[in-house]
Image (cartoon, rainbow, N blue to C red; front, top):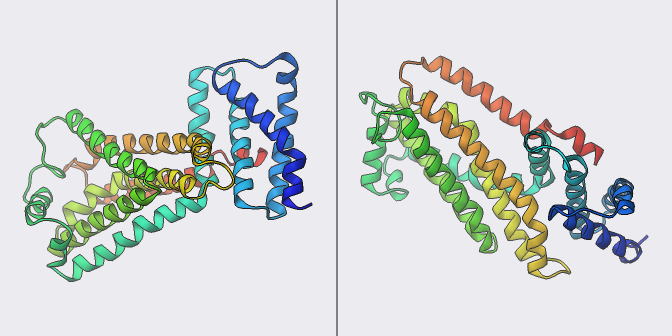
Length: 325
């Protein structure tokens, strides 16, 4: 069956299903018959998505059906659950499944961030002057003082000696960075691309410059612990921003406003997950990374475990629910 005939045959069914989802998402209830029929209609939508993918219909149609499947799954398996259960579902299934559902945007965001990070790191390691093309001299001097082996406290300059204060500071700084990267997607994705490239260049330049100075004993043990969550959170914020940009640039046969509306729910899931990662990163940075009493070997070992956890979590968590969909 050609795509046009497929859409004509099932389009009214999809619209009716989406209308019922909107009612549920607004906290309203369906009629008794509609509520009983919802699971069967959901399974039908899943079958339509499978057919669209196997027949290689347009990405626009597959994305629309995938969105209906995700929203339907969320309502079927979260509806009526207490708040704690909803949070648990988000953490154990909803968020990592959404990251995988937008896998192409994730890998694009990762490439836009990691490639300049690596290139800037190498450039600053082998060329002492290159760092000054990325940062002003005053900022470079401040950064060097932060990780000077003779410095008492590791990391950013502390206005307070309390770890709690620094936790709040790190959280505000990092989430602000993530929100910038996400909101830049409203500029047709250009803003998100810019902030991913920019943050990659700066972080890579800092790492290369400090390594060249021989500050490896202070810099790398400090950033190793929270890096798994912080760097991944930047990529996730970029993924959400690119999702917004894609909706504006490629709305398909619908209006840009309608495309943004369809993209809103997955974007919210991604940015909430990014914020959670920033929260964990800030906690680790304030209470673990900044401790000069902990041996570097222990910090590296924990960092390896955290990276393994983040990769496994995003790759595997919620996969059973995703297959069910």
